[in-house]
Length: 335
Image 1 (cartoon, rainbow, N blue to C red):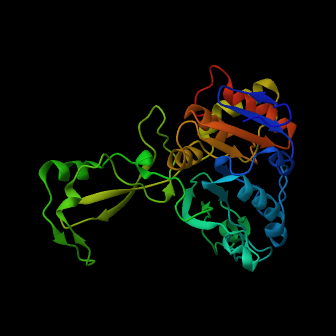
Image 2 (image 1 turned 45 degrees about the vertical axis):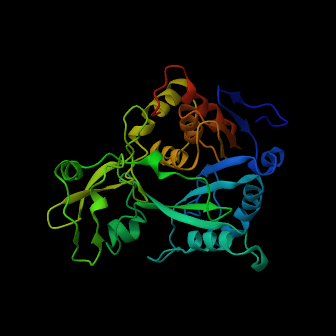
Image 3 (image 1 turned 45 degrees about the horizontal axis):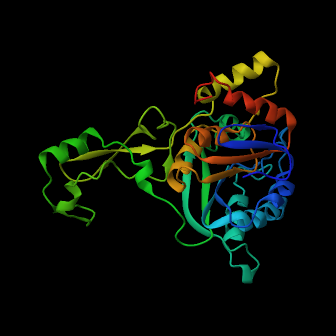
């Protein structure tokens, strides 16, 4: 897909454009995008250099973008929004802005909403997050470290394109032993009746809705095992996997090259695992992925590797310059 303006740079599968995404999206035809995967500026207490809106203004600010998102998404398309929570200034209590946002987006159009469906919530656990707000976490010790972002998966219809077979996790050793040795049907203490079909090999385990940081490209798996266990029966223990991804080591190449070139790196980068999980779940090779708040363009980089066509919009020229480093010939995927 080409817009009516020159891209800042192009690759085999996609193009990055400099400009306001509200203006650039006008050039995208109706119902032509398969997936919008984005992390817009959060409504944080502290102002960031990339620009962020106050929580009490956030819903109205986002609606203009959401109207365009709805127009350009295919009927089977998905809108996936990574959005961090925030705190109310001066108090150790949470803002409700990200919940208010999803309610506004999913309220019926006849009632003043945007008409999206909430397909599912996903969660990104980031163990590298700093313990903030420091006043309540490290000084007064009244709260615990906030390390989870909510990811709203929205759609225009109840059955968007999606297939969890593309994001299956390898079976645990316990499950492999069960498949090898067989399973005796029984009723679990919870009351769930586990039939003999539980022992069928279906190629992998269905992932949970908590995204972890291990990437499948060249590694064969999305999802890093976390030491939490669920007892499936009296005899079988199944490890539980989570999306546990820091945005530190996964961006080492990008940060090093920015330093070498004297470029300004984007300060809020998400890890490869997040767009990889979503792109695999909601699209197929050849589909079109849009990132309207591109930043360091991790979404475009992952889409390129997965052979999806992509568009990336970024309003800050310094960030779009540095994002091009992700597509250097010798750049590793995790960059």
